[in-house]
Length: 74
Image (cartoon, rainbow, N blue to C red; front, top):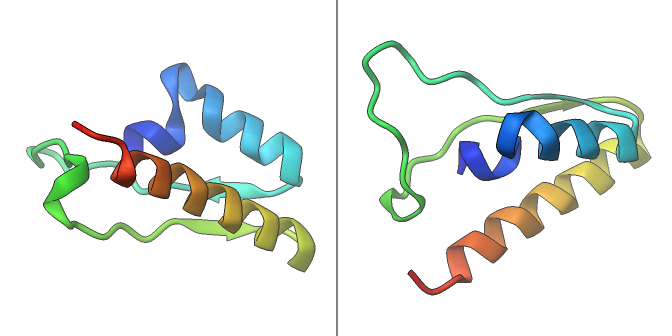
């Protein structure tokens, strides 16, 4: 899911941060870690900093991105 949340060249994460006035931290892959594929069930911890309203809106937008990719046929 990292690539979908970050977006091409960081476009998606920058847009989310701008729209919600938050700071999003998606942990980088560890050295030698294989890319995570949508169907492998791995969980990553994403942190969102900002005011209560902005962080909630951001969380919903990230959840929507994840749901869209999970439900999208392969």
